Amino acid sequence: DYLLGLSTFAPDLFARRDALWAAGDPEFYELNDKLQYLGFFAFRAPVPAYKHSAAQFLHLRGWLKSNRPHPRSERRPESDVAVLREVAARLGVLEG
Image 1: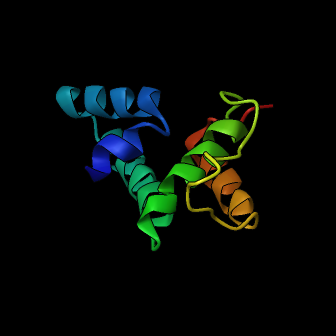
Image 2 (image 1 turned 60 degrees about the horizontal axis):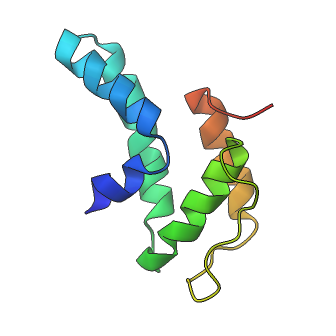
Image 3 (image 1 turned 90 degrees about the horizontal axis):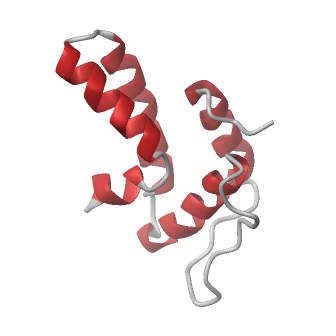
C-alpha cells in the first residue's frame, strides 16, 4: 500500500497531518501536499526502488547511519539525495 510505504519516511509527520485533519486545521492541506510530493517522487518507476528512497530520506533525517538499501533491492541514483534534501527541508525535518 502506497500510504503505508510512504508513512515509513515520516511517521511523525503523518501523525501530525492526521491530527491537523481531525482538528479541522487548514495547515493540513499544506503538509499533505508536501507529503504527496514526497510520495510522487519516491514511488516513481521502478516502484520497488522506493525502499532506497526511504533509506536516503531517513539517512538525511539522521535516523539511519547509511542510505544503502538491501544489496538485492533496486536502487535510486545518488542525485535523488539533493531532491530529497529539499523535500526534507520544506517539511522541516532536515537533520543538522
